[in-house]
Length: 194
Image 1: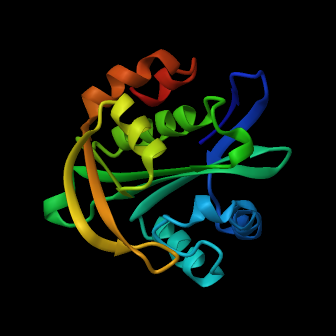
Image 2 (image 1 turned 60 degrees about the vertical axis):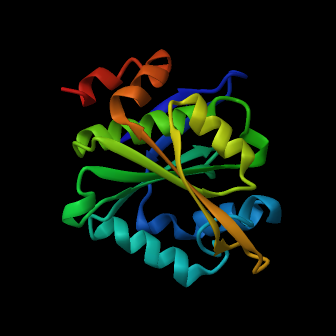
Image 3 (image 1 turned 90 degrees about the vertical axis):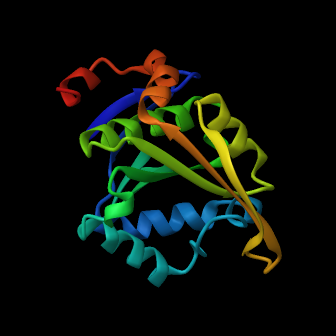
């Protein structure tokens, strides 16, 4: 998958599938993120071996990762982790990280739309988003897209400062998510939904 997109400010960028050869660019992207943006991520994304393990999950069919590129630099990454056991085979977990410079320009929505289409290709029925309680903007965006807060687990996870945080689990049916995303439908998406 590879396509050109336009942000709200008119900037053009490329969305494509992450390749294992992108590791150096990906590490540059992660290191460029302010600490506050990395603090609540699931893993220390500045640890190359952890990131390489995540990329291997793509090769093993456990996840799909897409990136947004501007001037050949990664400015966002989107992840759809696929449920591989019988209980979760109809579910996927979605995560998106956007460079601060490109936030509030529609890039997050573009990435989520692309992940939605990938979820549809994998015949998923439900999308799950997990985050820590302080990730207020991420929770707002998920609510806007039709996600419901299903569960709060107090002091269940630790942030990068080793401080215990509440885990928030949100879910959304694929149909509900599409109702919110259809207004940003790209003219080439119809080919992927056949």
